Every structure is written in structure tokens, then in C-alpha cells.
Length: 118
Image (cartoon, rainbow, N blue to C red):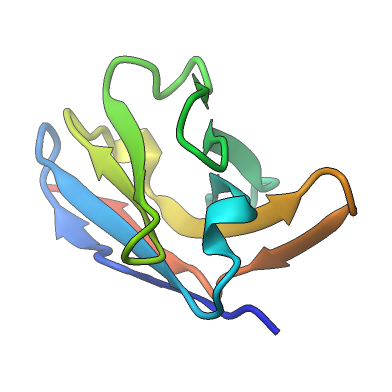
């Protein structure tokens, strides 16, 4: 069973930066597409970014494009989300998700809180 553990969240002022990490257990990490989602208080969970298993294709939500960068290190079983030029509206719990499209399998981490405030 794969476990995902996010880290790197915290309190940052507007315009600041954070890098989130999501570490996965198990040996099949390189076969998973990885995504980041976020959920703000009182709102539905929204997709933020996605990277394919080998990192060859990356997509971003319009709200994060140009400010956030998703990357992965398959040797470390870790996916990252570099967040720059943070805004108060980026405040949310950020979750990573692993998925295999061919099987429909997916797994979620427990989330890490990001708060953008002065």
C-alpha cells in the first residue's frame, strides 16, 4: 500500500515562496502520475498541477500557471511544488495524489497547510 506524506507548508507573507514536498513509500513511484490539489476553507478541492510518470508532460491550473512549478525526483520517490509570488487566495490545505490511469487506482496524502498572510 502506497503512503504519501506532504511537508513544507507554513505561514508566508504575500509575494513569498514555499516548496512543498510529497514523499511516497513503495517501489512503483515512477509508474504514477502525480498531482497537487488544494482546498480552501468552505470551498471544494481544486486541482493545481499534474506531472506524468516520467515527467514528460506537465499541466497547471490557470490560477497557478507562471507562479507554481511541479517537478519530481523518481530516485527519491518525491514530487515537489515550488510556489512563488504567493497570494492570500493561495491559502489552503495542499494535497498530493498518486494515480495510475490504466488501473484507475489512486492514493492521497494527508495534506499540508499553506497560509499566505501578512
